[in-house]
Length: 72
Image (cartoon, rainbow, N blue to C red):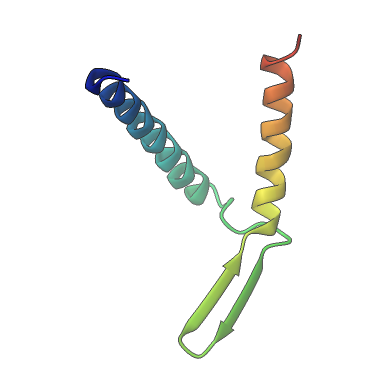
């Protein structure tokens, strides 16, 4: 694997991260950052957030998309 192909992989990964970041910002503005089923624990100055509802939603959407695009 040459340096040119490593560079292409890094640029591709950066583009994917840019798109994901924009998607998460958009979802936050739409109010989808806190779904039912998300757990938030606060004690003093510590906050622990478990986005279980969001992970279930992303899993369902990802499964549907993979079944559509990778169907044989």
